[in-house]
Image 1 (cartoon, one colour):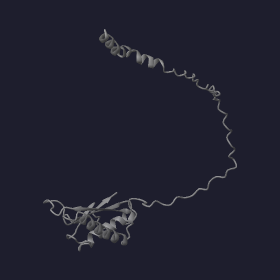
Image 2 (image 1 turned 45 degrees about the horizontal axis):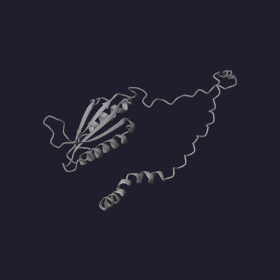
Image 3 (image 1 turned 180 degrees about the horizontal axis):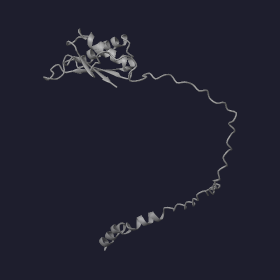
Image 4 (image 1 turned 180 degrees about the vertical axis):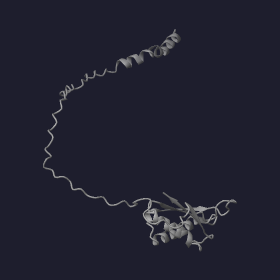
Length: 199
C-alpha cells in the first residue's frame, strides 16, 4: 500500500506537466491594440485653364519708302580670269612630268631647268591651271618616317623655287610619301617628284 502511494506521488508532477505551458501562456497580459493610422487628405489638384489657341493678327507691313537704296559696289576681279591670259609658250609642258632624285638627295636634281621652265611658262599663260607636286623618297627600313621626311624636304624646296619664279603658292598642291627601296621592274623610280597639271 505504501509503495503504491509513493509511486502515485512520484508521477503527480508528470501528470501536471502538460498544463504548465498553458498556465504560463495565459498569465502573459495582452498588448493594447494599435490606434488606426489615417493618411492625411491630399489637396485637390488644380485644373489648368484652357489655353488660348487664337493667334493675334499679323502686324501691318511697315512703310519702306524712306529706306535709301544700297549703293552698287563692284566686286574684285576673279583670281583666275580665264583659261589663257598671256602668250602661250613655244612648247607646252606635258600634263605630267617626273623629276628623278638620287637616294637621300634633297636639292633639285641637275638638268631639270628646261622641264621646270616649260611648266612655269605654261602656268603663267594659263592661270586657271594648278600644279600638284607628288614627292616620293626611300628611307632606312628601321626608320619608317625617314622616307616621308626626305620627300617632304624635296617638295618644299621645289615649291619654294616655283614661288620665286612668280607662281602663286595657292596653285601648288603638295604631297609627300615614302617609297619602298626595292621597286618592281618597270615601275617608276622610288626617289622622284611627279609634276601633275590639273585644270
